[in-house]
Each structure stands twice: as C-alpha cells, then as structure tokens.
Length: 175
Image 1 (tube, rainbow, N blue to C red):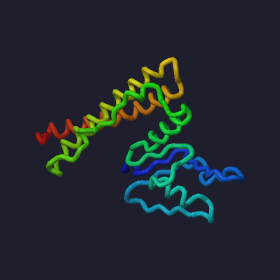
Image 2 (tube, rainbow, N blue to C red):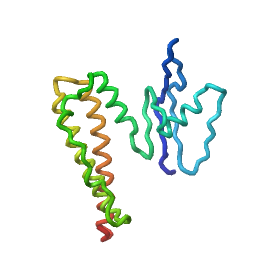
Image 3 (tube, helix red, strand yellow):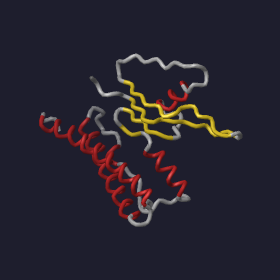
Image 4 (cartoon, rainbow, N blue to C red):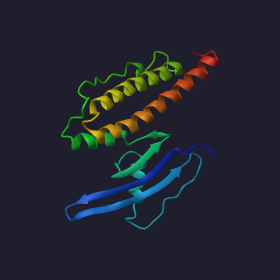
C-alpha cells in the first residue's frame, strides 16, 4: 500500500471570537493516499472547509500535526508560537544567517543530483543550527530545547533520506 500523501494527527482548530472560542475541528486523525477517492461530508459548520483549508496550507491548525508527503508542516508554526512566547528571541537564533545556496536552480533543469545535493546541504545547515540552539538553551529554556530536539530528529531523517537518494544515483553511475 502506498504511503499517505497527507496525515493528520490530533488536528484541531479553534477560531477566537469576542464571545469565546468556536471549535471547528477537534482532534482529527485522518490520512489521504494518492489514488484514493475521499469524501469529506457533514452538516454545515462541522469543519469540512476548515480541514480542507488546513490540508492546503491556507489555515493554521490550533493543535495537532499535519504531514504532507512525509514532511512535518508545523515546524515553522511551532517556532513562531514559541518566539511569540519569548517576546521575539529564541536563544541561539541571533547568529543564524539564512542562506541556501545549494537550493538555487541548476543551470540544467534536469540535474536531479544537483537538487539532491542542495537539499542535503540545506538539511546539514539546519541540523547545525538546531544543534547550536539546543546547546544555547541547555539549562536556560527547556521548552524550546525539547521542541528543537524533536525538529532536529525530523531534519536528520530528511537528510538521511536524501543521502540515500544520492547513493542510489551514485551506484547507478548517474552522479
């Protein structure tokens, strides 16, 4: 069976109104696989559109996780919430310089190996940065440290995946 394209775990969305919160989604667990036909049905106000907007990246869930093609989509959102809690500064983040030279388009648009190496380079830079944040938050901010350790684990998995792709291309003599 193919891997699901989208996976929701505990996906929740609460809209804040002057009179309180309106829960549109409550701990939704679902997966959607390419080639499957899925119908999202329910009465008006049951969260159908909210779920579809979350899957499309147009609406941010209040809680839970959402993966698209195996990729966690909530890392940036979690960081944003944590930065807001810390009044704008995450320990160790001031030294971060955003650069992804390896992900620039290759001269030949069919150079898959270039793209794979660029992803590996970007993942390596992210891993180094997350490791520095873990060190900077040690004994200072356990909440951020725990969050970054989890994200670091995901990034290491992504890098291993692309290193495997590169090994396959090298074994076939295409790298």
